[in-house]
Amino acid sequence: MKTLLILTDFSPPATHAALYACNIAEQWGIEKIVLYHSYNKRYATDIILVDDLLVPVPDDLKDIKENALKELDDLKSQMLSKLSSKVDIKSMINDLPLIKGVRETIDGHSIDLVIAGLSGSHAKEKNIVGRNAMALIGEQVFPLMLVPETAVIGKISQIMFACDLRYISEQTPFDQLTNIVQTANANLHVVNVDYEETGLVNLMETETLLHEKFKNLSTQFHYLRSKEVILSLSEYSTENKIDILIAVPRKLGFLQRIFHDSATKKIAIHTTVPLIVLHNN
Image (cartoon, rainbow, N blue to C red):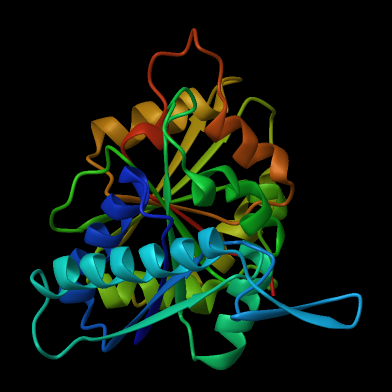
């Protein structure tokens, strides 16, 4: 893992995610960071075409771009103060819609991981990137880390892979998952939560596959029985001081439940633990 793409809209959650990314860049030996901002306006040039006539772009659009450039430079300076000279930061800005901008940026660079900030579900501040979290996940073409605004910046040593054993297969992105864990030099917790009886034969086959795929990692396996999947994962995360959660969602509903769990469940994973979303091969 060599290159990170950090998305920012300059909101507090996005800025925290950028600083969190600096922390993992130092720990993981990242060589390059691409810092991307979309000011998401219709025009990015000084002249626009209206009914075959060239007319100037309104001054307020120019101001938006100029202000965004200044904020991007300020954030880059803040990040550089947290990084060693070995990490190169490249700033990018355009007016493309966020998802299209991310796609084009990924196409132009060898991006290993996309990182975005995520505000709390009741946050009032403008957090465009965070509000597009499900759309980013829905692309299903790149590894994505979502960093909560309260995520602790520190040493990463415990990573949890939350999985459903019924859907583990050769299509599971074991290589990507292994690369992340090895890069972080972390311990891996493979955690399954289910309230149904799983066939013994299928369970043994899956365990054999997991043990084979993770044989070069420091791995421990845990099987939790509960109907409250999200709450059980959250409690396990807290008890075992998990630093990063990795999920390979079969359906987006699983992630929607993480981000928008019932208010009666006081503990929620996304309030403190960054989530990396991988996709099946």
